[in-house]
Image (cartoon, rainbow, N blue to C red; front, side, top):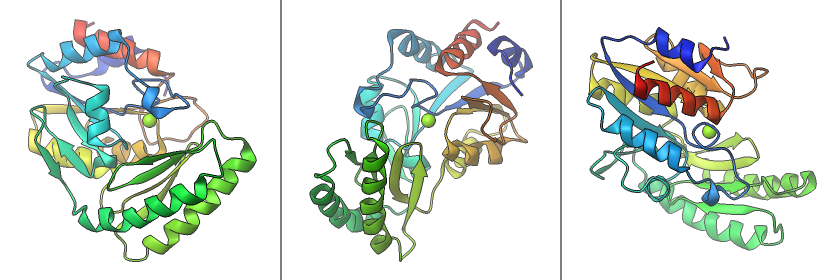
Amino acid sequence: MARTPEEIVRLLPADRGLLLFLDYDGTLVPFHDDPSRAVPGPELLALLNRLTTHPRRRVVIVSGRSADDLRRLLPGSACHLLALHGAQYVDPEGRCLDRVDLAPCRARLKTVAEGCRALLASVPCVRIEDKGAAIAIHMRSCDHESEERATRIFEGFSREVTDDGNLMILRGSRVVELKPAAADKGSGALWLLERFGPAWYPVYVGDDTTDEDGFRVLRDRGATIRVGPTDRRTLARWRLADPAAVLELLARIVSGS
Ligand SMILES: [Mg+2]
């Protein structure tokens, strides 16, 4: 159901701390053809700072990006990070924990990264993002034909390394990824919520198909909000239109109105 940020804030419980699970791309920051340039604006950084210094607010960034990438985008931030789709957790002090064994993923992806780079060099619009324990090819600047070709090449490689069950192929909006199979955003969010305990009320905000795992596990425990067009099916209880509406929601949570 579409709600305004003002309505959502009124529906959040006043007697519990808020544990905000926030996706990054398409939720906090609009998409950019070059993902490395999807940087946060000063307003978002100021809001995250005010939220993370509030005693009864905590922020968790839940993203397919690597932890290093998220730290580069949010320098000095006191956010918790669930990186690589929840496979890796980093606390606000920078302590990193692999929630699943990432060593087999890293080992198998080395050959994929080398092979893909050589073959995809002939498709110039493709951006390869090597995240160590995952690899993504971004095709936001490709025409349809190049996107199909790049996807075919990547999936050909991927089939060779998914046979032992450590890695899985994930298709997103103009991106294909090989990621650790043993974790998703929902299992990551639930794991962290359990560490925080019942005094914390989860609010999960995301725009991706992968965020549906978060909506599924938190639907009966907290607030779930899908960002983006209303024609996409979702398990989330509420909807917001775009990152601007998410920023307004965060501003209202900060001000308590
Ligand atoms: Mg997203």
